[in-house]
Length: 119
Image 1 (cartoon, rainbow, N blue to C red):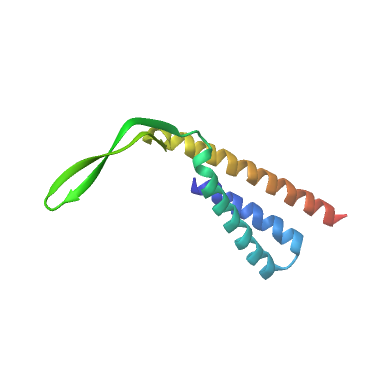
Image 2 (cartoon, rainbow, N blue to C red; image 1 turned 45 degrees about the vertical axis):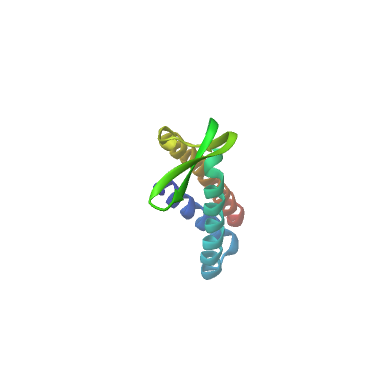
């Protein structure tokens, strides 16, 4: 969900701003860290909920010959891992929960960093 990602970016930016104490390096570091987190979450997304494995006893492959379609026999015992349409919202909620958890960790670290610098 875009709102959770925006909250994560703000929390990471606040943490890095407090840690680095320089505006422009903190902005660049926020861009790099948030970009890395986004790429990590994109790679993690298919594994948040287990895919459905579809087995096919005989895979039939299309073979284009001229103007006619000929179907040739493929390999036996093939399987495909896929996420059906019904997995959309559970995947969205799982990713949102993970992102909000990371947001809470970043916000708690920013509060800790702010309290440590005030003493």
